[in-house]
Image 1 (tube, rainbow, N blue to C red):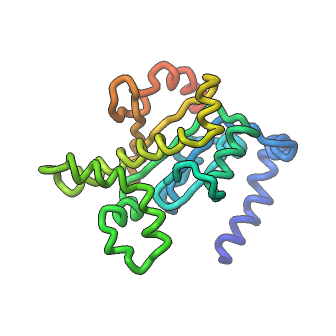
Image 2: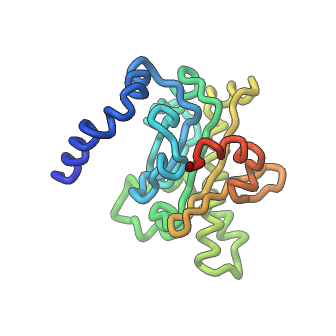
Length: 221
């Protein structure tokens, strides 16, 4: 904990003064560009991956980057999605899975989480993705099966997301886009689902000219 406290002191003395104008603007409200749904895994650093500043992402994290289908039962994910859609009016949602995901490993081997009843029940929201891998993944290596599961889970959670009324409304209005990503911890690669090709592509290939237009902001003199 002293390490974290020292980090706070460094932030207050050095980082905050350099970005004072940004934080003063943020103190007046937020207008994030995306709802970013990621796994709680400590190795997934959303701001570092996307190179975003405070205020640009509205972030929800949980084990397995899961979005439960909409029901009348209130939960943290449901409330956060509703707020992001109806109040913040974010134009984009990203559901981001990642390699070496313990939640997905547990989903593939439910007896391994037998002593974790809440985790086991939560992973039930990934069951359809597991079933797809079991039904179509014959002949694949363990690594290939896990890669398929990571991708299928992202696609499944995208489908779950569309069941939320505020999401369905925004999609019908034509002012919301949903994106599915998978982040590779070991290589830094990020793949994004492409509806036209019905597969995951590199983010550069998936977004093409859009990436090129924004690349200048990251150029170093």
